[in-house]
Length: 395
Image (cartoon, rainbow, N blue to C red; front, side):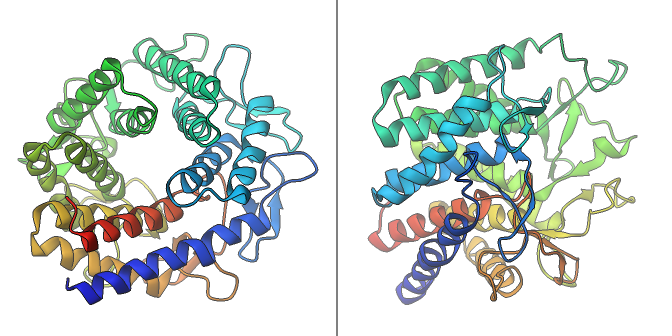
């Protein structure tokens, strides 16, 4: 990439974030009657459901707080984050300190899940918002929630029955991945030896248990000690987007530590995932792949989802920046072209999230419990900032 191309790309990602994506959310999802965000919206921003999910609330608080902290201290961004923070603080927590997954519009509890992902998003929201406001008590609340996450991961809540009987002992790649990412966010507000311990364990688990070089893949689920379980679809499942998201978390850690060996250890994850996931016929990365080419269990396996392409985009750009290896620049350019040709809603703004395999829109929903102000704006911000570093010649 020459300098002119870097400038062109930098301006594209910056302007898409600041002039399109952030304004879309600020126009459409704020609930001034009940607090929080009415985040289930159609393509034009009209509300399609009044239920509220704390995945989305927390991620939105994190995003606007991060923009306030890292882009510009705009009062409107902090106010938008505060609106979600206050609703989350008032309605998001059960008496046991855990978080609800969904609530009614007025905050009445609707659903609580055994998984810890809501709490991880809550922790990063609190940490980032605490940094934005300078309120040490909010940062400390983030740390308390983080410690609860770690404790519950080690000793699951016995009051919530497990999803499966223990006849098949498997573990998911999602937990070390999310613990790595969550810890990296909290570390911004003060390092702690415990953070490094969690990060080290997460890195070890990903690289030693979930990555199998003999199969050239990072698996979504493995046995408790990393053994492959290829006799069932769950054990053959590859989620290229998740693998590539993990890859950039690992590369970010390598940058933080100045660890060239970790960069080298991460590169195969990107290489394997792009080889398995890229659709040679239509372009874009497939949602799920069976490592043995058998029929995937998921009906939506060949769809093209927004977040999958975006995590791949940033992972490849970071890999190119850290290694200088041309294949990552090539992949980045292919993903950039695919994303900007297929996902943007040129009528209403923001991006569609769900495409058929051929790149046509499968569902016009702009936000639900999963698509929200998170993957797209985070990727736009990350790519913009990294391109700035590349232009400045920083490591």
